[in-house]
Image (cartoon, rainbow, N blue to C red; front, side, top):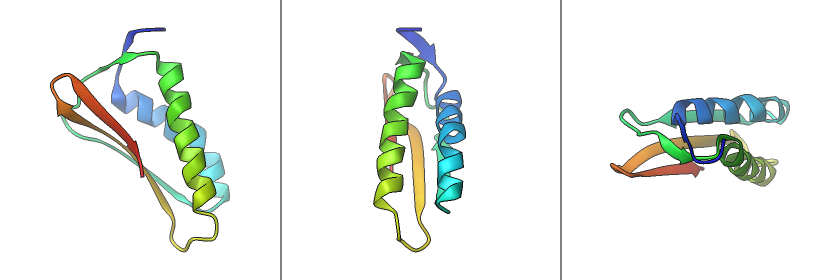
Length: 88
């Protein structure tokens, strides 16, 4: 739902679940980490999942042929009201 509160652990779990089949097929390790104390995020769960999936997909594309590839999705608090989501 638009502007609902999103648990970052649930968000990253959904992204990993959706991206895992392709990552497994391409033998790319997928990791996720949510820093302790990361607050809830205001937004649309489905839209944020789609944005992160697009970034993960781009990362998987870029890692073709790389030895020992890893894609890491993280969430951490930057302040009480700012959460950083990253795909590395």
